[in-house]
Image (cartoon, rainbow, N blue to C red; front, side, top):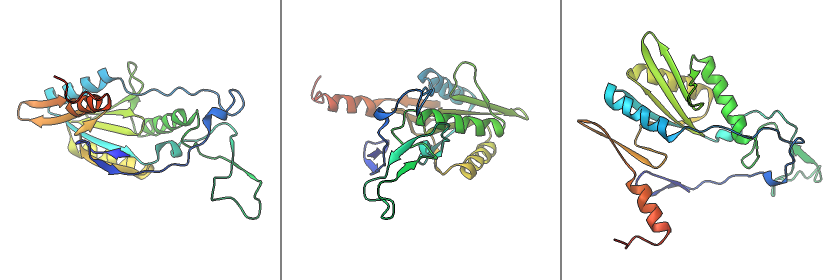
Length: 214
């Protein structure tokens, strides 16, 4: 289930998931590590936005892991309900990573990093999920957390141009201004930006049956 910032259900999703636990290292996968943004980086960018009056927008990549490129040979049995009547015992060779494959996150991160480099962004040395572009004195930063992107900068026109480039390459959802990211609510106020983890904390209390505790 995908949730909104207020905790309500946004939509229901279904996935064909590969049995990654059946993979063998050195045979059908090698490296698996893929970086995600550090919480310190997220807070720093929000603080910069508050201090400099930057805009913060958010985009979501649809089916992110399916957009990577497989370097290894990976085979799987035919999905239930989609078996070939002509070749019922045939297996499928995957061209793209599926959810569940050990290398899927890494393949996606490599794919989007390569494209961000093409459109002028450089990876930060302190956080491999932070990308910076500074053209004509108008900086744009992107925070990548798996399939969620936060785009910040002082020029709304430049942010829209970056969003258009990303949408032309990947199927994405433009979520407009940043309101909720990694359990943090982001609220614009006249004095700057307020951040809150109220819903995250309430969900934790609910999970452990502590909503009535004082």
